[in-house]
Length: 180
Image (tube, rainbow, N blue to C red; front, side):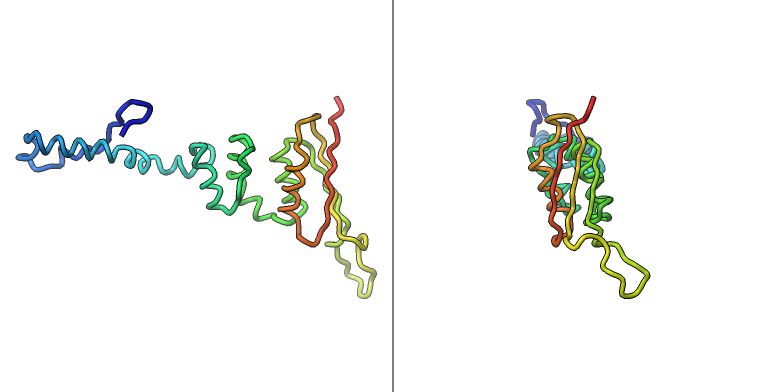
């Protein structure tokens, strides 16, 4: 096999492992060389497996598969570096999934802007029995992002909020231009 027109060599050739009588035979050396050529990319992958499992080092085409291991589906229109950051932080983000802190952290990673979340207070509680329900009667979430003009894709942010918030909440996204 070749990568970019250059034949890969194996760090573990089969020829020297043959009994001495076969090491001098041209046919045996030719067959083991063919196996070495076929196995070289496989052995290189196995030897570099830790790099494939690290989101900062894995090849870009392997990143989506790695994201699937932690249960996220990446938007292929995002830049590779943004997808790497999401995969690297996926476990921490899932730990906070559905919370204001989790949504804010996810949006901060995606937008690189200042994220403010205003919720209706429906998750508050009181120690006083028979007290009126806390917060507003509706369950709403307002997400306000302050970033440079054109730096935030509002439909993608809306989709991220929709996937990360509790299903019973309605939400709105507000993009505020960063003041110089």
